[in-house]
Image 1 (cartoon, rainbow, N blue to C red):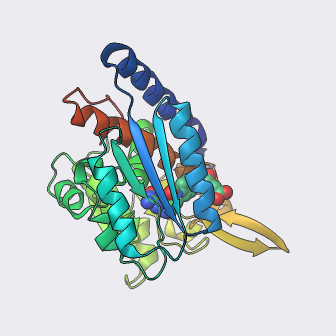
Image 2 (tube, rainbow, N blue to C red; image 1 turned 120 degrees about the vertical axis):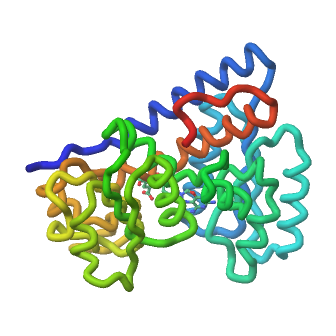
Image 3 (cartoon, protein in one colour; image 1 turned 90 degrees about the horizontal axis):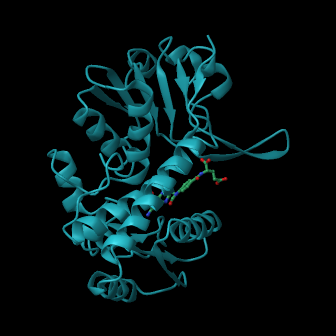
Length: 296
Ligand SMILES: Nc1nc2c(c(=O)[nH]1)N[C@@H](CN(C=O)c1ccc(C(=O)N[C@@H](CCC(=O)O)C(=O)O)cc1)CN2
């Protein structure tokens, strides 16, 4: 068997086009322009690229982009003051603080200073609680992107067995909540899970979000399963820099029914879903119907 490739790049382009169409209608019919503020602290090279792409894609979707770049040595109090300003700014419907933050900052404190209604990352403790209790929340972008691709591939996820490998607050835990919300039978596995291979082999849907290059191998995958690779690992192979996921793509493709590649799978969906979340936050703030098919 050769797995069907789930093309995240194409999927993300479709999400962005749907967001842009809705944004255009909002402007014409209501005179409203959704606005996204992105805050970058420091000069982490990968973060700089992600933030630049967020700005470009926000503008391409017809939304207003507000970029705030602060030096690495910024005091936490100054970052909190900026967040308070953005919370109070009616032109800003979404706020995102790019992670990771410099080591002297308390990321939980910073994230929880964002108005939960503008928390387009879905990391604020209120949104975590709302998602965990099945209420209307802002949903973290990467898991939302995975869910959209899974729904498109399977139709209904109800009754399927899902294993999420990784227990991070940003991906693993919200991914599990979303799959549970779609009536999957969900297991969260991690580095201490006993006989991880056997646990993974029980999965109709296997989501790898561990941050270990090519850790999920063919022997860990049920024939025909759908494999979603969230990993983005920069490695060196044969003297060349390469980007690989948490899944051994070549080996697993021979066993799985469908698989997301790295690059070009989950990654592009992260920014597409950020745009979708900004639109959703804007609609909610203005008491307007939410965009269909762009939320959990
Ligand atoms: N506040 C946040 N910080 C971070 C998040 C997040 O969702 N919110 N996620 C990641 C970084 N990230 C967005 O911020 C992100 C990561 C990867 C991609 C992407 O498109 N990846 C490409 C490969 C790009 C490359 O060559 O590096 C792919 O997989 O095809 C987009 C966004 C951490 N921080």
